[in-house]
Image 1: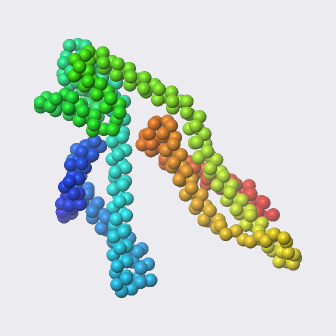
Image 2: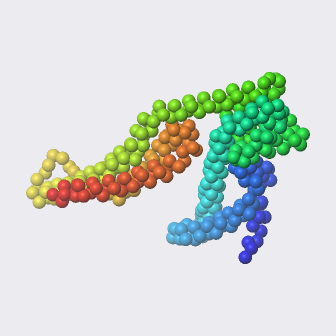
Image 3: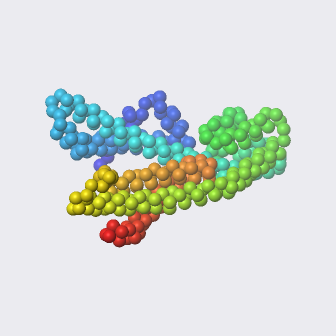
Length: 343
């Protein structure tokens, strides 16, 4: 059955002033049309999820403590807070996904840029004009870069200046490499110099920059190994060892207290019970490992790839590895220290 007003609700929740910016942002992510139907579906989802969370969790808690006007006001505020939280979380996830997609598209274009510029340089050396050399260099294997350059070339064919169309393309993505490379080419066109030689120097500069980045990543590999070992092995082992220490101290204190009562002796030290629950410490350890693994994976991503976005895949790997080893350490140390507790 067709959902009524799906696209209309999607357009209603997006202000008209933001629509051009959203369309431009989606184009950078490779989405050609604004998904108003998706936004409308999210609108229905917000309403349904808000109603479920409110009546199953918030309202039963409120009705136990409040009544009358106060209950109505708090119910309205809690419902609005639930809806706002769901909307903010959902749009944050969508924005993160699109931003990561834009980043990956930008990196793909940067990878293809030297090969593309080689074709342009060869076409220029063959006697073609810059516009024709740019158009002839567009090949399917260049992927996203070919698509974006094709759009710029079409703008040139419709009467737009070459420098304006290329500038729009480079400003579309947050890539210093694309921007600097094409800016140098544009300046060379304005100056009337040998564009082919200039492009060859740009290619050499890009290649040298990549080599330097690889050398820096190889030099800092020791720090990557150290951080990885600490997060995945050392931290889970220490938390598991601390848990066993907590159990041993609790057993020791209980035996000391029993000895004092049965013997009637008053020791100079007063030992009370441990206020930390074992279950709470386990939960704390897991949350701490998740936080440590997340930030450590970001640091490793910065060292190896030069950007946090490039290493998003490290985050679930670090978290899963640290939690798994924490579970294994807990099992092994429980068997090792189980005899000490029984004594």
